[in-house]
Image 1: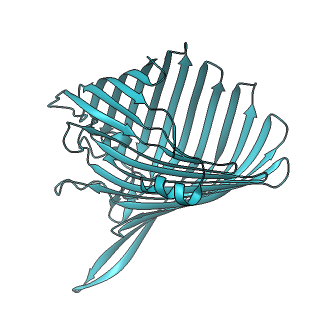
Image 2: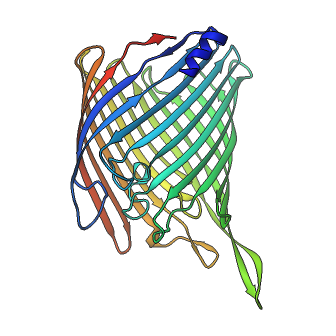
Image 3: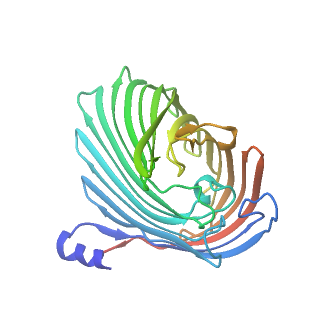
Length: 390
């Protein structure tokens, strides 16, 4: 209300809002992804989405509060409540485009890596922002600069301290040159700094990649990149020397390849995306995690009333842990997480949509090998209100 009031008084620009309100009910066979003592749960929840937009010839702005409020308690379930506030601003002219995004979120760690804390979901509070700037130097040559910052905090039980509150900042340039109408070559560089908020550990990483984008046909595109990454891990400890605590820093290194490949199809009715990647990512452990990910997604619009979506993602991670001042990779840190989902949307009217969703989630870590799996079914009704100018 305050933003709308200010827009009328000051900006006199095209502000608008298009709310969504919905009711959803879901069943999960094992919402806490446990191996034993499995109990299914059924929940009813209200969902809300309030996107506030500003659109002009060169500037676009979005403020989007959205959340879920259900009868579930705490954050140990896949059906936990969440509250997000997303913002985005985009500026475009003939030679330059710039985008800034930010998010504040409160939700469960299970939304991101399943049993990240070995079957115990915890509350996750996070804030993040990222920005990118693209400049067209010539008709064929482009320069892009990306930067991001994230801070995450976990509300863990006092006797279960596995996750680490952290901040992560990264930045890097990209140079793209169009060899032809269908082929583009890229040079990508980046630097990232991962720090635990308690000051005990940090990881600094650098990588350089060569990328290639090929427009296979009018609807098929292949994008690839590969390169080398090096991460230096530091653990700050204290040495007891005759009653005096002397600060000591122990270092170790992670070296290896990083790569990514994505195949996309953009058609009138059927769209497809498939990708594979290997990268160092922040997760909440003491250092960066080396992750191999595989994902695929497809959407099909059968008619004006019916459309379908199928997504699947597999994540394999090796999470280094603190062991005598060194980042050790042992079998105990291996982790696999699979998430598959099928959704059918029935557009009853232009304003009302019913969605039926089936999900399957599995996780595995060890040794000793521990597994957890959950099957889910969800039905939701969402009311899309007309876009209102403010």
